[in-house]
Image (cartoon, rainbow, N blue to C red; front, side, top):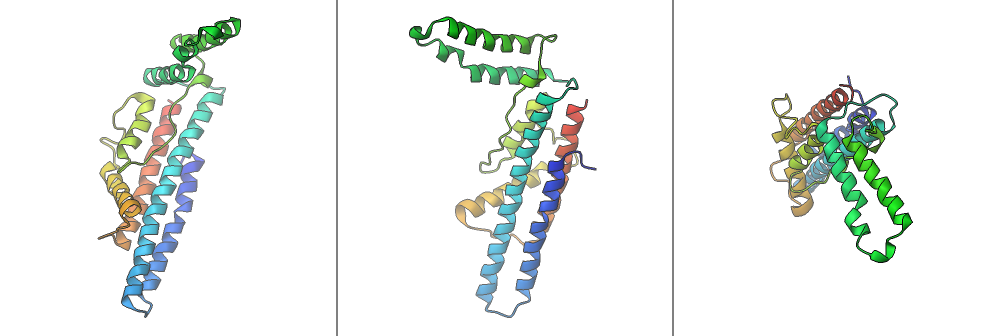
Length: 225
């Protein structure tokens, strides 16, 4: 069972990978020059990996945005961890940029005082359990892909409870995601896909589904604890 629409949408959209795999199989049985077959297979394999990772990236970002919206707009009290509360406070401090606002003495007036007072009040409420307002909770929802992207993924989910690795001791081997992202990086930056087979692409697709289900369950458990 999946709890979020984004998870179901991701799994449904991965049918595109099946279509590409079927094209590879069809290409393998077509009697044309070997180098043409090889070029077509390479293009389809590279496309499969890039699409797979792109869809997962969009899934992560859309899901986190939805979680943030649900927390900010829910009428039901949300159990906010101390870690997320402090992280959100840090982001609020950065967004308010109070030092910058105080740099120019010519702006020292009642409007500035009102503005500062409003911002400081938000920060104070973040620290006061009785005045804390979940509509002010903020956290990062952007999933940036570096050479791998696994550490970035861990950091995104560390935001909720401060766990360095939510995948540790789980049934999901995050090292497989590292391999997938590494392959994508090689394709995008070196236009190479040495050693990748259609069977690996199929297994990668299955893994992405398992990983998305794990993330889905983790976030549902967190916001409903």
